Image (cartoon, helix red, strand yellow):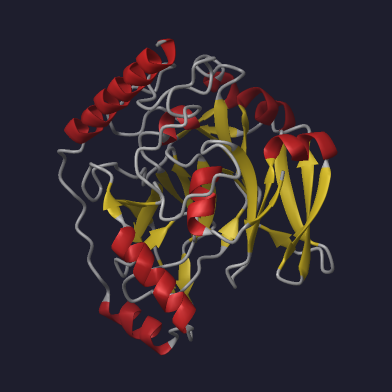
Length: 344
């Protein structure tokens, strides 16, 4: 009985939160001006795709659903402002989740409390466009470089569409659609192109600040009226014992593939390659063992645990090349990669 009541309260809270998102979404939408010269460049550099890849993209496009708010109804942050760590200490709790970036000497923390309302923050580092992305429904963060092809770069926005409950971004140069976890365009002139990635660390404010005391912190002065305070997250909280959506088995949108090897919201560390090979390890298992090895096809990948940041890092064993590793909710990772290997 108690479980039923808690589930009902959870659903009501999420409906109210999504209703608030829909109200806030009634804002002027950003017009996407497709650049003909960019389309021409992409047509000349279109990657060769296999029938399997074409079927995957078609399936993802067909299974994409509206998340509620329209295109740009969840507004990306296009002109991020920053404060010092000292200023951020006045409103961030030590246990607050932040998404840390250390890229080309640019060090910044993006509080989850802010990005839950925006999902994409666009930045420019020494003339290079980058995007910090977060999907609350799948618990995933990715850093994407804005270069789509040689001579074509873009910032990104929130399309309003989801697949496997995961954020689908769109680029503002060609209006192609990019599921975040896939990191590859499934529609538009950029279809089939995979974005280059850079690391984003999911950690706590206390851990990030200890390692990077001079870090910048994304300011609450975003240009939008949102509740960035503790308790303002429309889906739940990572600070409370009862975390709402983030810890329940309830999934707002059914994934394409269901995998019962783990509970839906179990946190795994996922790695994948451009051939579609994927593997996942339990975050708790990685914490315990510190170092694990998985195979992507025939390529050995070593995943290590950074105890200072409570974060994973993956490298190809033979070359030492960095490989993106992402913390994700199991149901969505398995939705994109049904053949994923699992170390549990």
